[in-house]
Image 1: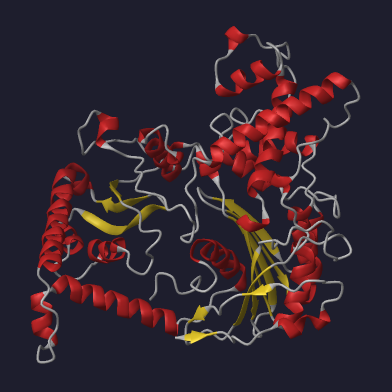
Image 2: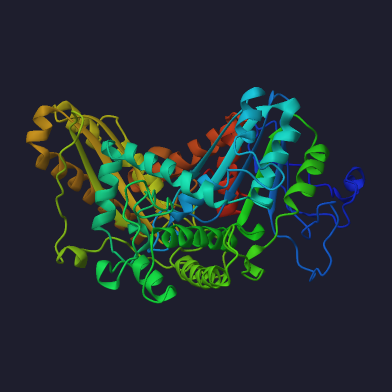
Length: 551
């Protein structure tokens, strides 16, 4: 096991002008023996003003934003990622897809760089690229660029989180991009099966939320040409959104009111979740750690905690008092909606004060008390796929002791005597994979997916019977292992030990292989490495962000 340099770095801030308070430097990152990169984890100080000075009126608390600086002397690219520890699980049910929509909107200019395409143009002109993604628990942004252009790219990137524009015109246009993305998912068999799975889940569980969004769930495009813009009446709609607008607008509202309220919820969602304490930043480049620190601290240190600010503002271009009053009502309703929805999502960090309990989104009572249930889906493409799902307790908080790790190994094993070997030899399947389809703080959903032959499709019950029999075999060995484990005495050979407790032997082998892989694998390309590490750090902390699941 290897750690990064633990020497105190406070004296290195001499090169950072106008910084009145140094960051807090955290414990070293545990890294593998083959990892040649240098790491410096830290937490940023007070919010800074535009001149890089500490804002007046600080209450003694840290900015709270977690940062990991990484030097890779061999890299020709500079990369950065920001991971927000909130995602679709925090969507208000009245506006499904708002987290994904917020991800799209963050890229549409900032106060410092108001041109919508300036970011992507700069990256494309200097050998770079960018992306963003929204999962149930995280919203993650990433880019890379040729190393010599990293500082300017980081400045543009950081301003998306310091002061994004979120204009009304951009809101109306970008909802079409979200809708287009959803339209492509409609012809994807995997996405279709995923949505059916969500429909079978507990409707009160965060897993059941429609995470992508479309122009129906996010009516931010105001009035399309040809649409009826007459005011809605109570009897014309009873959805959550209609009910909220009905109460805000004294009994009537139109499509413009819907679009305005979507923007109000968008701003409230950003204020609630895009807080420094809820964000992790990772930067990787050939620059020295001191230089990277001098780039990051003055920029990301200016991100304010907007949730602590008062909800003030007016509708863009509004001059009439009634418009301002309506906007104030919308802001208040939006803040309440977002805050209530935030409680749906379990805490991401394993170090959170409130530990989530096992809360499965799938239970027999939801399907009449009878399990298993069979769901058949007609695919759009020619395919024969059989998928088994098993709701299990969460292992989010025990990455190095996860029982689903050994289950994945045993069900996915392809050697002699395995379930796969038997099913392949009998001509029923051609491939099999096993692992967590959902790994959340409050639940796991274990998946076994197989590609069937024509004979396998006709005899799918035999495939299921074999896998269930294999599962019972694993269960029986686990019970024996837990009830009577004699331990490996000094005079016990490996062969005797394997006979006494094969399941523990296999666990030891898997753990050893994971540790070897961790120590002997070089780090990946900076573009994919940065976002993965940012998400991992938000879950496991900076010390274990690389090693979690490998030790």
